[in-house]
Length: 478
Image (cartoon, rainbow, N blue to C red; front, side, top):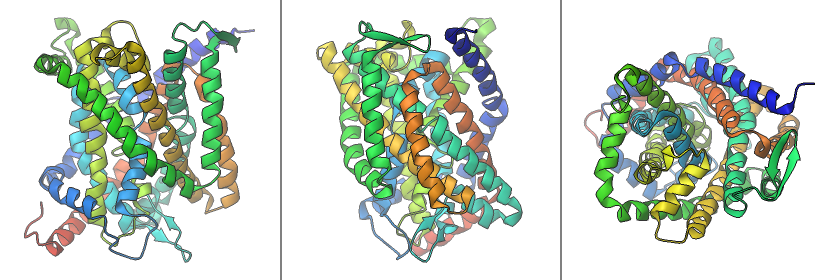
């Protein structure tokens, strides 16, 4: 009988190979190309119309009768699913695997990804379906089928299938609960003194207890449906995001003189200039691959998840919601991930043999003027709440995908919730590398149908943008 540790090792090797194929040069080029293409076609809308996006968010108006939530509510729902382990653990994982330069490519991809997020959320409003009871069905599967035509319905089904798998086996469950239990264990039992052997591996009791408690909390909210999910997210996300940003900002303020050198290190690493001559290209490709992969995991631009939340907004202006939704990428990656990355690079915690949440924990311990236990507690609480709301948000996304696949069969959706809860329960017992690799694979597969649709419907995006800006008093396309 093959030992469990050998099984895990072989599984990691297989998953790594699959991930290498999915996140190879073609997909990286596709993601960047779509973002660059939309940025050019919309003439830098994400920069030039940023003030208008902020005004629309602050106004938070319900410009139409169709829809279920406000623009602010939809943004909070989307942020609840994006601000999570990607901002804390994902950034650390990218920098450890690809060097500090991964942060450069993460932000670069996000700048162009902001245009992508605008386009996909605009299309979600334009092509959504409103049932007689006011129930909203919308997202990439709808704008693929209704925008590209019935002949492309298979592509919409493919997206929905990958969306269910991404929520169930990757970004929605395994990575989040694994990050939570890792942070709790790192705080309460960093040396794993209280451990038990399960499935051929040693696990700390804190991991097991935290996993059971979080699973129970997820079950209580998820079984209650979308009303509970949105209610919890809108309360938790703003406060925890502010707490995390303030903590990271304090680290940067206390090390402000080291920021220029950190930026120099990041840029040099991004282009392989810190590696030996023969390994420069390999170092650069590692930075590019890890930066873009973790970046899309964090902000989900091009992934097609945010449009599912945007589709439920109470508005009749697709472009207006597109502008509000694109702020999610700005907040998530350009601001929060950059702050996380800088704290890691400045403190040097990425290059001391740590992995996952331990990297960011050490950065906070080294950078904050508090006792290490206090710094660890702050990060642990931020990660717990961020990841918890991400689990809830991705349950909603994957349920919508499943609803589309099954033709709206609610019995199937309700049964799926229990399977989702089961995946949350087993997440803590998976290896860190396996968890992130699985998430990467399904993210990549999910992005492909959506990116094809965005290229196909880019003319619709440009036309809707022109119409809206003329209505708002803009003489030209941005």
